Amino acid sequence: MGEERLKAFASVTFDDCFVVRNMKVVEGAKGIFLCMPSRKLQDGTHKDMVHPINQDFRQYLEENVLKAYQEELAKNPQAASAAQEQDA
Image (cartoon, rainbow, N blue to C red):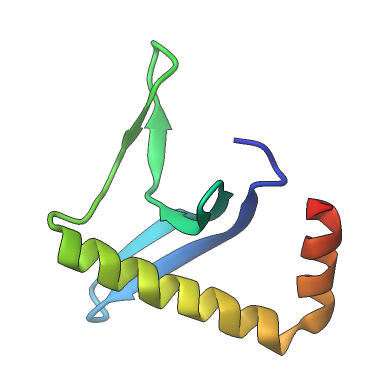
């Protein structure tokens, strides 16, 4: 994955008892989306190490992580403008 596509890493803690680290916020052809933590296999492909079981939870997780990402950008306008310059 190109560095210019990678926007952020995210970690989420569920109910103060389970954490998922190394999710990635990525800029794709259709906009920003969330990638689950993955491991590169010997054949060069990647396999998600954790993932939502159903589409409803995937959507809920992605919406909330991307909302937090946008809030962080809003708090730090310099980081947001640096990211936009990198994309140009």
